[in-house]
Image (cartoon, rainbow, N blue to C red; front, side, top):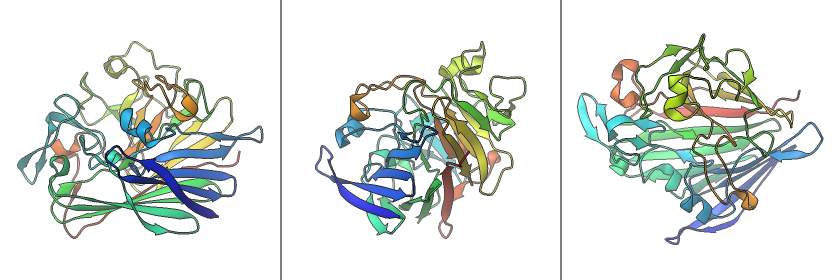
Length: 343
């Protein structure tokens, strides 16, 4: 096990950014302090080589200039909140919009644009922290966040911890884009999800209901199938967002459990996603379009997919979907793991 640190450049406004390299066995991960982003994750393939299975950029400018939240920690509330407002104890709170009339991933000052500080460095991981001021993105309360990346011989573990001095919403996830082949599109990847229900959305990507059964629809991944098998089916939900960009409601609802299994059709790499959250957003990179990814490679739609573990989108406007408010005296503490079992 080893962790090393080196400079990665600086932001346009002069904030220095560091890169941490974590090594354990045959796995290697790179994390930068800008957005606490997972920049690289190299895992062994069946041919004996290794594959970098996440998308990213070669410079801080790449992260500042291109959209997509590649590898970033997103919040204060991941996913979309309709009308850029939410309910807190019966009171309507205005948020900062950044996607038309909606807020996405915490707004224009979300965590993906912040430079995190190192708060702990150990033999197998690093903890990065950020202090979100009261009112950032419109959210009440000063929120203190830490994100710990830990690498083992078979997994990358991400633990999110936060406290707030006022009642607020907190829904933090990682927005890594995975391609287990290391290139090409992901339509040939096979995917299994532990979800018998999903959250339908309108053309604005805001939920129209909390849940709908996946049975008999293109959203049924309860038996492993190719990501591209049904992605272009004549289904209104797919047309609304040009593919998959939906929350899947996990079975069972609680505990650290396996929620997804993704297999690269050419590399043979298998990745399992484990989480304590009640949902996972499957996003097939429908609008991914950047000209200068790692090594100068352009990234195109459906070149990678995201498995974002989360509370449900627009939940802050639906208290009947469950109490997810983070109140003073409570601690937000959730873990997600990306495991790479030997096959």
